[in-house]
Image (cartoon, rainbow, N blue to C red; front, side):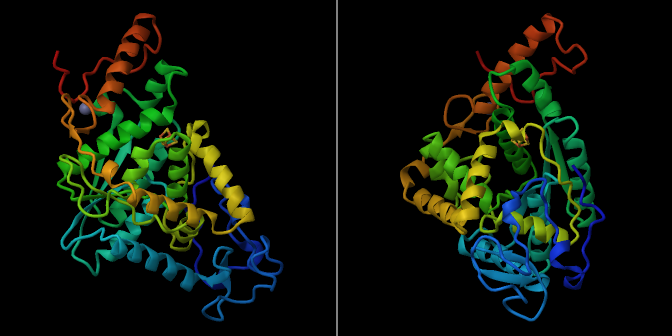
Length: 379
Ligand code: SF4
Ligand code: ZN
């Protein structure tokens, strides 16, 4: 795994087909097409000579649109789609205070960069929020990148951690739960919980999540596999103002931009990013769905766009589930569909297990026994 720091590419002139940057760490190799000579994937039979909009040398070939694009037109296209998504889905209001969920990965870092750019022409207040899950060998690096980038762009950053808020790291939760639950199940629930709390505390009006087009397509298919129609119905919850108490509306302004284009944009713009995958990522269903979608995209370009589009259309057809009202968790006050929110129930279960593990002498070096910040459950 390598950091992309220092790999800044200066201009389109610096490109040639054999120097095309291939982020093989996290992208399916088939997603990158050579820009010159024979074009793989069958989307075009003619050799690529120049950008679809000018005589510039292409930096990318997009099979779904059968277009080669130079650096300038590619970057403009990414920025245009970001703004168009915001406008189409009415994601922003005048003088909005946007919380940017910043992980230090490519998506959230590009999103921070795009919002910073937008804030020069629109009256927006920005606050970056990073959650430190406590993943050894991974989060410290991405956290450092997030801190540095927020500082460089002069966006205030709030860091909230599992350790501080719950009294244990994700690594510790995974160690005590053994195979009872996948790391991502804990991580996703706790991260959403803390992001919402931090956003409310900071007075944020909307929480921007760096989900790209691939994420949207993957999430939709995962929900289909799980028959989780309630989740599908919430995929468009940002359209209109969600009325649920205590819930900071989430927006996804990158949802129309494919992952590989965000990755390339980050390199072209010299956005420092740590291209490292979470060590738990391979255990996720998402990884399998991702591979499957990449394979389909390779043989049938445009698949991801069509799946993501279907997700949004189906989501809109489920108004009853979307409007399902949430109540306040009796323990932490966060929005919940039942008496106690999922995060509080998970924290309680894990703390019980940690108590038993401590008794058995497991993980004595870990920091344990600290009460979660949430109120204690009423008996
Ligand atoms: Fe969390 Fe899973 Fe993502 Fe790792 S891959 S950061 S455990 S959700
Ligand atoms: Zn709760």
